[in-house]
Image (cartoon, rainbow, N blue to C red; front, side):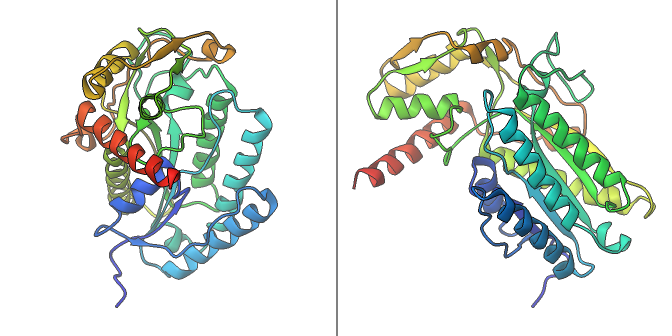
Length: 325
């Protein structure tokens, strides 16, 4: 039997750190859309499939609530501008496919996973909130701002009509992180510990970051979608809704404190090599965050940092054991 109240949900980038936890958090809250695997390595094919799948989502929903959680993107600080151009083209392909009668579009919510660190990296005094000026230091941050502008413009245009939530997310960590990407301090340090090798750190140990556990962030994403749907329903059909929300613990800690916590959990000091890299100049020292938008979403019990690190370590241990067999 079809559930006409639970939103039909397409998670784009379901294999990534945030995407996989959003899929898990959907259980009991929404209906997962049967979407094909996107061939990201084939940009032309991926663009066509994203467009077609987006159109099929709106058609399948047929007037019921629907939502898209865009967690796609392999770029990190230091990634080339050409790669970000391709990623932006793929986002546009999906947005073009999301079209239909205005009443059907008004049933939808689009969530864009953006990066707080990327967009605020050079913005000046912290803590940063949703109303702070943005000033990226790298192509990564500029690409995130461009994506934000694109989805906002789409929502306000003739092909939009659905609500848009832009989630500026703090430093994600947790089980399932892709260690092939040069990011994720917690996971990289845990992996180095398990493999008994030194880990390289390219920034000062007094660098402040806000580390949010991915399963907690996934729950916050779904709460944002629910809140946006309520606000959109209260609006006139001709209005648009675009909301920017910071998703963070709002408690920044230094990299030195991270290492100290890992030492307690590992029961030995992590092997650290401090070095210099051109990418270091693209990193802000203090990325403390706070949020003033939809504060009720922040009123929750978050996973403690030690508990999150322990879960991440256990997950990595299992993955490394499977890899060795």
